[in-house]
Amino acid sequence: MSDTPSDASPRPRQPFARGLPLAAPLRLNRPSDTWFKPALSVVAASAVPHLTLLALGRLDLVMYTMAGSLCALYGHGLPYARRARTLAGVVLSMTAGLAAALVTASLTHSTAVLVAVGALLAATQKAACDAVRIGPPGHVILTFVSSAALFAPQRLGQVPAHLALTLGAGAVAWLVCVGPALIRREGPERRAVARALEAAADRVAEPGPRTRHTAAAAVHAAWQCLLASGRPTPVRRSLERLVVHAEAAGASAHPDQDPDRLRAWAALTRARGPVPEPPPAPGTAAELYGIDAERAALRVSGGRRAARRTLLRSLGPGSHLLPVAARTLIGCALAGYLCAALGVGRPYWAIVTAASLYQANTTLTWNRTLQRTLGNLLGVLVFAAVLPLSRTGPLALVLCCLFFSFAAEALITRNYWLGSVAVTPMALLVLEFGGTHPAGELVGDRVLDTVLGALAGFLAAVLITNRRAAGRVERALEAAAQARAAAERAYADRAHTGPDGLDRARRALTARLVELREAADIAAGEWWQRALPEQRLLAAERAGHRTLAATAQRQGPPVRAPETRSGAVAPAPANGAA
Image (tube, rainbow, N blue to C red; front, side, top):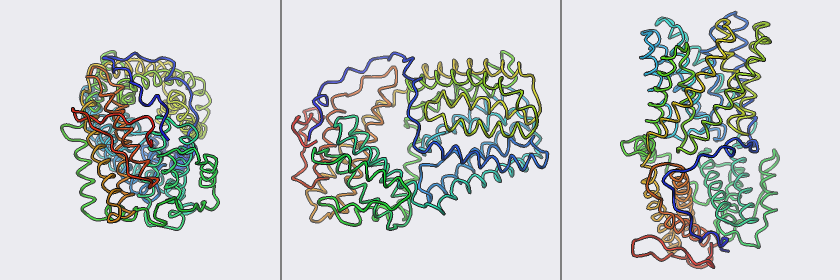
């Protein structure tokens, strides 16, 4: 069944510079279906070292243990096998950034040098987190810790002991986040597959380009989660079958498909009971769907080398990530020097504020600027209200920090500004572990740092253009065309390719279409660049999804979209199979 006629309608030409939204970035969203996991994990990971230091009377060391505890915020969408490796990498990265900051702080007290090192660390952390696609909270936590450590009193001989505290707390965080595997080892995979089924149900109920892309992205994420989950189990085999059904429904959206059945499967998959056992999807292999071959390819050294080469290319001279890293470097340095020039005692707050703004494009960076500024200013008021309570005793201070740690993760998925209302008092209360400070000084410095950091950070985002975003779209168009041609060849020669090869080709095409839409969305939010090839994007997406639909149903040959003289793929007819 074809999408609505709006699919084929021309899209407006990309403007030279876009307007700035005001209300939309502040609207509240539905909370994440797993908001409680990072919220509970960070509380559990923080409580153990906090209470231990409280019993020892050394709450002045909380900053170093908190660096390790905050690692519990990462990796909650990953299967446990990959989560274990990812969290170990996060703990080591956190420790490395902290080590660089502490050594610098012990060797110099020059504000100019400290700000420069803080900006360089922030840019490096931003580029690395974007390259590996670590996901929320990204580089912000790493930058918060390293920037704060730069301006903490430090002697070189203290550094090894402080780093040992961070590693110890990081080990606790690793255990907290990986421990649930002993109870429900396929939990992340089940949630990813449930999301794919729900997205496919929405696609069937309301066919259109938006639900089509959402379903394709959810199915791709589910396959990636299963691919990284480790050795096959009966539960994972059933999950693979469910993803095949979601893939077929999301690709074709035939009216005879039942969205209620897909939603019922999603509810059972998300629950703690047995995974539904669906029948084999029409025309598909009953068991493997080619995923075992992909696992084997990733396990060999050649697959790992290819993954490392891809990662290095993403940070190479022509990478689309470099302009955002340059924005981070210059924006953080500008914010830090500006605050230092005005006599602010803690310019690292301005560095962290600027670093937290940078998103994939200028429009999203503007949205984050509004959210961060509003959240921080409201959070300062909350801090002023709870400060008397936190000063009633050390235990009260520890409990206040744990409460705001939980509240931040509970609220931030509704909107970033709402989470910042809780993050701000938590960050300010951390200073109380080292000794009390005048409340007026803390509030005034934080307000000034927030405003100056937001202004300097957004100014850098506007002045440093990212013209590589459009080039990324061109490369994504070529990759999508190649993947579509490979899927069509696999389908035409399916007698020799087999269902495994065809399914791998389809998954590769899905991944390229997801990347194409991501690249187009990022480029659409950038300023001061050439217009995007809207018609080519529309035609490439329609042709790719038509190929997915034809190969998913195994009905007839995939429809090959004609090419224009310029090489662009022409839009498919409205009565096509998409």
